[in-house]
Amino acid sequence: MVNEASAVAVDESTGEVRAVGKEAKEMLGRTPAKITVIKPLRDGVIADFKVTEKMLSYFIQKAHQRRTLVHPRIVISVPSEITQVEKRAVMDSAYRAKAAEVHLVEQAMMAALGAGMPVAQAGGNMVVDIGGGTADVAVISLCGIVYAHSLRSAGNHMDEAIMNYLKRKYNLLVGERTAEQIKIELGSACVLDKPLTMEIKGRSLIEGVPKTITVDDSEIREALSESVSAVMSAIRVALERTPPELSADIVLGTAKLLNDVKLLRRVTVD
Image (tube, rainbow, N blue to C red; front, side, top):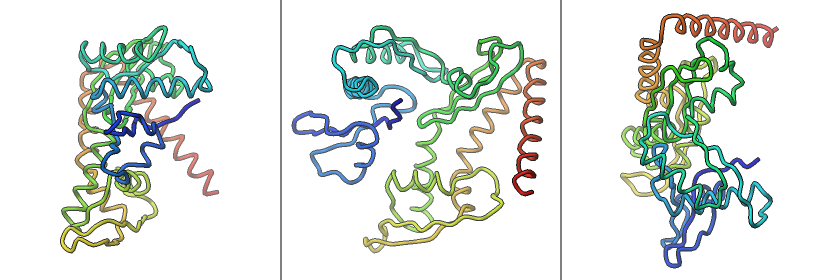
């Protein structure tokens, strides 16, 4: 199994790939002028065709212990509302990376299968898959998607919201990696049982020197409120457009899940 970030570090002077995946992501904001860290996927679709091809080739080789002459069958998840041109670009990149077969599956379906949901049954299953570039909301029944909607506002947009919030409130400039770390450690949609705080280091926009501040989870919740509201609105629209029988299944499933969570909390406390 390979679990890597979709990032590639490229030497601008030679065009050579210096690093791929997590190693390239660690270089964000720390590279010399001639090395650029590129994120070839933007909003869930390909933004840089050649770099995507190199990234896929690297992942395929790593998954197969770097053996040569590997031509695997590949299944790629894509947002539910991308165009045929964007789908063709994904398939072409995979074929140029020496894939033997390429199959595209909607992200919501892939997420449901990964979560072990009973997608083959005649019942409603709602999936909310918040990725980096897109957030997919879908209702699934009988191995098919009844309703799906893709938001071009997800994890990357949340990172930008945190960066803008700190810039606006504290005149503090932080990088993408720091913003993502803040989101992971302090980010939440609801009030937490136990408040959290975090020390953040960045550069003062006023004085131009390094500066350290402390923020709590309520501030980050405020920064993320717009992104969370967009996802909540998409869920509301999905429920409105879902057939009533499937909506009832979703409500019953949600109630059971909440009861299981409450029971788990009581067992943990006891």
